[in-house]
Length: 290
Image 1 (spheres, one colour):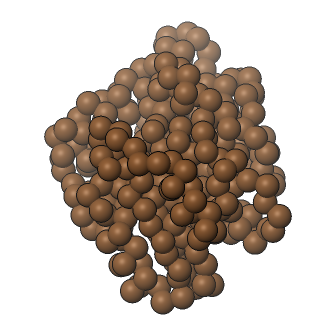
Image 2 (cartoon, helix red, strand yellow):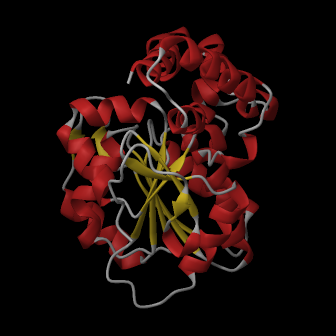
Image 3 (tube, rainbow, N blue to C red):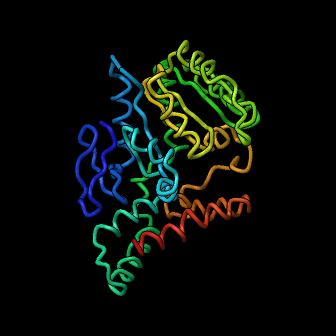
């Protein structure tokens, strides 16, 4: 199923294979529990006869602000087969918009109630965090002799993570490619060379870490050329799983479940403040005023 644009006022419905969905700023987003999403993806990997990979997007709340101003990213989201919420702010926004009245006082009270639900961890089991999803999928692929391809990352982290995963999962087959000479400055090697390497390996899952927005656009532009079953953009997950960089220390579960991952990352890397500000306060305000 291609991602559908639906009315903002729509109630939660059913999406791919009966997964629950809800609307956020006219985009259909999975609202199914994490375990149900994981089970669906595993079922999907057992299907044969793919005409192109299944394209999954793990979305942050600020992704929607980006989609409003970046036509290339909006086109990438339209091409996704499924969008899942990577953070609790997105789920909180969906809940708030369902009962938004357009009147300041009742909406403010409703917003405070949704905020209380965020802090209390109500949305924890419905988020599909990219790093957790990658970790679980790799483990399950390893149990069944599956194949995964790591594309991207900074400073050769894909190679080091591939070596680590091979040691931890003896049955797992892993291939990797840096993808770009310099991801920060976007100095590409031949995209055809990258795709040829991926297609010769024919992975069950292709994980792409070119950084948020860039990775989804690259996937969407090359989706029909890729011979993989499932493709996911995973942002900084390579660093987290390899134990490198500013995210070497995993985010504590209680931090993620209470919607505070953005604040945790600021404490680890002050450079993250600008994005964190956009990810939570700015997005929350725009949701309230929309």
